[in-house]
Every structure is written in C-alpha cells, then in structure tokens.
Amino acid sequence: MNKILHFWRNYSRGLYVIMIMFFAASETGAAAEPVALVLDIVGEVTPALEAFSEIQAGQSFDLGGGAHMDFLHYPTCQKVVVEGGKLSLSAENFRVSKGKVIDMSRAECPQRVQLASNEGGAGIAGVVLRSAADGVLKVSQRPSFLLLGASAGQFRRLQVMQGQTSLFDATLDSKPLVWPEAQASLQADGAYSVVLSGAGNLTRQIPLSVTAQNKQQAPAIIQLQ
Image (cartoon, rainbow, N blue to C red; front, side, top):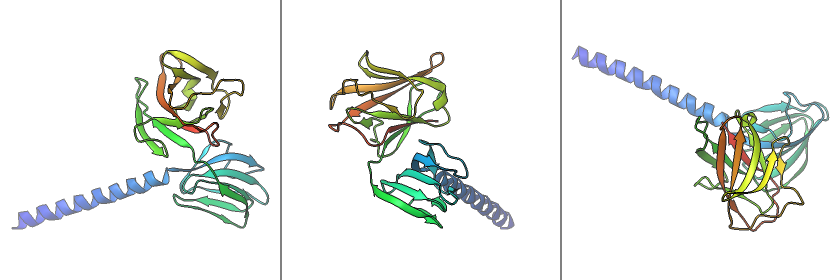
C-alpha cells in the first residue's frame, strides 16, 4: 500500500508540473500574437518602432508629449491614430493613457500567411488572421505585399507568376512592395502565385486567390519564420 501511495504522489506531482509548463507555454504563445501593424510614426516612440512592423500582444509604447502613431488594429479591423501618452495593446483591444486618440475608423484587415522555416524551401506552416485555411493568400487585382519575420531578410526578389510566366518581378527594397500603376492588373479568379527567392536555391511559393477588388488598403502579409 505504501508503494502505491508513493507512486501516486510522484505521478500527481509530475502531472502538476507538466500542467504548469503547458499553461505557461500557452500564455507565452498568446503574448507573441501580432495584434497591430504600424503604418506611420511621427516623433519619438519608446521602445523604437519602424513603419510597417508588427506589434505583439502585451507590448506597450511611450509616445511622450506629442509623438503620433498610425496603426492598423487587427482584432477590431480599425485604423487608429494616437498622440502622446502610453499605448498598450492586448489580444482584444488597445488602451491610451495620458494621450489621446486623434482618429479611429473602420479599415480593411490584411490577409496574412505564415510560411514554414524548413530548409527545403516551400511549405506553409499555418495561416492566421483572415487568410484562407487552405493556405491561399487572398489579394486584390492590384496587390501589395509585406514581408515580415525572422527570415524575411534572406529574400531579395518577389515574382507574381501565372503558370511558368512571370507577370511581375521586383527586388524587395521597399516596405510594402506596391503593385506599380503602369503594371496590368491581375484578373479575378485567375491562377497565380507569389514566388520569393534568395541566395542559392532558397525559394518560397504561395498560391494567390485574386478577388474582384481593384486595390487593397492593407498589404498582404507574408510571415517568414
């Protein structure tokens, strides 16, 4: 009987530790979720941010006495401009203390696809926000693209392909990469894909679904882990 009790005490203690580790990992993962895209910054923000970078849940920023931040809030699909004070963002909302909201309006939330970091190249690890569950990135007929993530700097070239034909070919030297005015529009429901390439044989390919929308307000985000 003592051996049985000793076993169950150790088993329960081990299970308790595993549960704590599981919930801690879950909270950490939730805190890392992107909740906003910075569109513009005027003035000094602490910690420093760049335009077209993402803000994670749980982050806070000091806008001092008069800095402006223009951002797209994913959970509510709102474009927000704040001035001064402290800005805090969670997975559900945002808060401004000792500052003010200059403007807030409904906006188009970006499509977003996350690519696997396997060495072989192609592969979609998961799709988040408002992207299709099958890994197809939905874009307008005149799309714009934004590459983010730890591996984004490894890529230097973006092509939009229709089969084996390259319709658009550009270097990734701007954020976001906007479809040129002189470039012919894509056709709704056409079969297209985005191909990213870097040094050596490094490539990623993402299928596209083109809507009837002429232009998109927010860039399609390609997250490269």
